[in-house]
Length: 219
Ligand SMILES: [Fe+2]
Image (cartoon, rainbow, N blue to C red; front, side, top):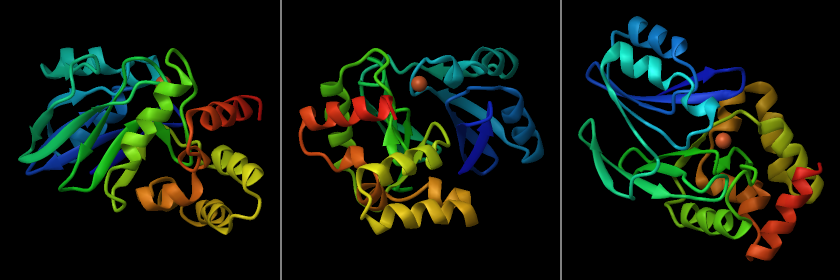
């Protein structure tokens, strides 16, 4: 699996096997073309978490030039077989009303888009706090070993907010310090580690979640 930084603070992801690849989100086309070329990979298809421009801005160019199709987040939840391994799409509304996360149980990875973004969650830009809270409960129910790959690098801002909410939580401070040494290992952590450091996974009611989201919007 390759994590490609695009547009400054976004990520798109390539799952690769035997010279073939599938792309998750497509905020920008050129970095994807470059990696496909360098790694000699054939792109088979694209999966989209949600249709904000910073997640789909390169999609049309990639589809047109490579002759591949993109899977919309608007289709129903289903289990795909991708490069020989199962991948389940999970409806996770809240950031927007149409949002999918993609879970590979055998690879133990989750592409979380803007539902769960390293240490926090997406803003409410169309969906409701109740929806996003319920979506995060679905993610929390996945195996703890799952590594979460969100749509952005917002780790410093998110951990600073987390530290403000929970000043005595040593795991939050440790994740922030880890970022200084090795950003990737602090951004992409297991669901178990997210549960220790992400305040939005540590509230147990939609009302508490909504209040937390409001506080972060003003932070
Ligand atoms: Fe978004």
